Length: 185
Ligand SMILES: Cc1cc2nc3c(=O)[nH]c(=O)nc-3n(C[C@H](O)[C@H](O)[C@H](O)COP(=O)(O)O)c2cc1C
Image (cartoon, rainbow, N blue to C red; front, side, top):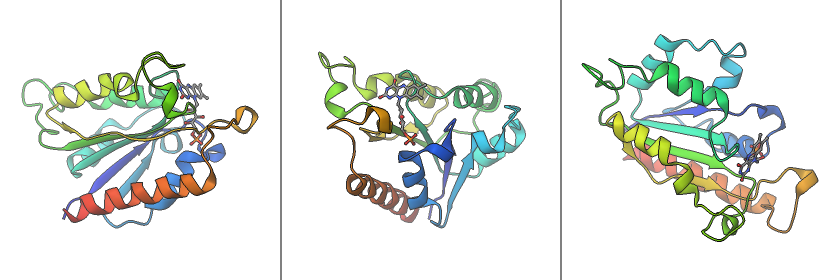
């Protein structure tokens, strides 16, 4: 039996559609701990020992966030900078994360057909996730296939590719099953 730590980084979770739906689907799962960074650290003063202790005690690290300018929201970047330190995550004696697994869970406004060479966005989500993939590798963590939900456009921009409530529910269940299976493995 394994456990999972979900590092949730949404700058405006109260207004979220996608991430709220995903969190609702997993929040009552046993062995899943959700750490909501923007709620926990409104002043951005991350408690590094607390975060490192959480990481130490979990097998799977999920980084869940809305894609922002093809990257992570700023507090998640700060979390990485502050928490993944020399001597903890890498370097001499920095072996605390070795053998763990990491899965990005990303929501995007753009539809999947945009994220393709020659498409509106030109690059795949996997390409935009390379810094996270390599960070995991550098820390001795196994990188798992990202879980991506597309078409989460704001109401004002909603277009034909916008994900329906039905599709979003299906994706949320898929996320739930993925974590359930991981925990049971
Ligand atoms: C500052 C900002 C930057 C964004 N950049 C991107 C982007 O680079 N690519 C994209 O597909 N969507 C982008 N979006 C859209 C968000 O990814 C989308 O609103 C979010 O994933 C929806 O999830 P939610 O319903 O949980 O808020 C951006 C949104 C904001 C506010």
